[in-house]
Length: 259
Length: 331
Image (cartoon, rainbow over all chains, first blue to last red; front, side, top):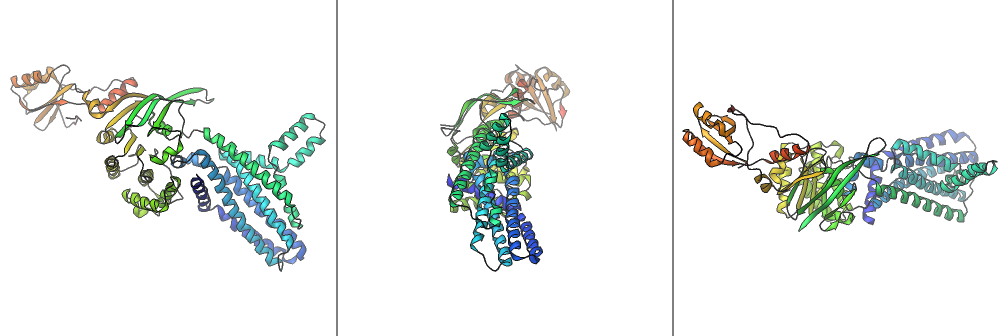
């Protein structure tokens, strides 16, 4: 079982690499180098804050792009191209296939994020003489970005099992936007005079994943560390939500006919 | 022992814009395949052949009925470790090379690395792909992909091999190779179940066949028995007959074909060999040979499929000899 899941996951990673997905790293490198040169004239404290904001923002942006645009075709492409027949005619259970694909894309994103993070710290080292304990906040922010990406992949995978890439992209993007605004939506629901609005806001708050909770880039720019309890609770939250999304994808895919 | 057992297999698809109509792709298909035989599933396009194979590999699910392979329900995914499958018009991850695809397939089957390497080398050699094993599959021709499909279906040395239209996309040499490969598999004691609409392949290879059309089983059995049932005429070849001899034989024969100095003819329905021979000798004909006419698989197929399609088999009879035409008749 583990061998089959890991084979599918590693193959998904290899597929992303060969599809030249990691070319986004080049764009990231260009962006960061340009930023470093342009900010050279600004005072060091301001430069660092801007670099942290820009660097972590770029890591998050490129990660989200990859998570959505690879995730939405993760299953659909296999069905459309009928490459799935070769896999499922082997002793591979459908849940193993879905889990393998999910883990493969998360691995791709982790490697991609890891390389971008290394580049980011390299630029920081160029700009500042040495790393300080506050820079640990950047690492925490990167970890939160990874948790967020794992959730986005789960959402994209779920939609990939039921619809075309265009619709999956639309749905995933909508879920991401709603999930990023959940705190505001909840506040709006409580402030509004309408009971229906309040109920709807509460419903959305509990059903949609709260992506805003994973965005700690601003705090990292100010060197604010995330409390240990929040690290654990957010990790568990992401793990639980990802498990629910992958399980739902499996339930749908188990019933899907591959004509 | 039955290796493959299908019982009342039925498959309905939802059709129409609102998916409110049912289209029956398989209609109570039942058949058994014995160990070590080559079994052909024949039928025109859309007959339900690929549907049957997809059900066996759980790519689609039957509406009703059961399917068992090697005594186990096809719903058990571990069963597939003992099977090999070539889908119709196979499509593989085209960013991989043939060698990588074979190793990937082997890893899904749980083969040890050394065993996977050995089998990969052997099978790619056998499929004629050894020289292009490092080439990305996206650069392969259709025939090469087909041969790779057969190679990957055999990576686990399966007990039962399922091939959906294995000759599709192959040139004459490739088809000969695949025929030889299928016969080799039987020699190795494996069971081969393949679907085709190319009847000559089935006639050459199969121990038994089943004919399906519109999802229904029209006939099944050993080729010899199926075709023996179709003996309904006698073929007689006469050396250089005169017009008077042909005239005398005309009431008793049909389908006269002149080839050089010989005229081949078939007895009309109800005319026995002894009667035909007597009439020929009385008329002064020099008889070269007299043989029973067995239907070819094509005749049988056309008779079965034509009936369900509402067509009458096309009449080919002619009372006058014609030169140059060739008819396929077994001995």
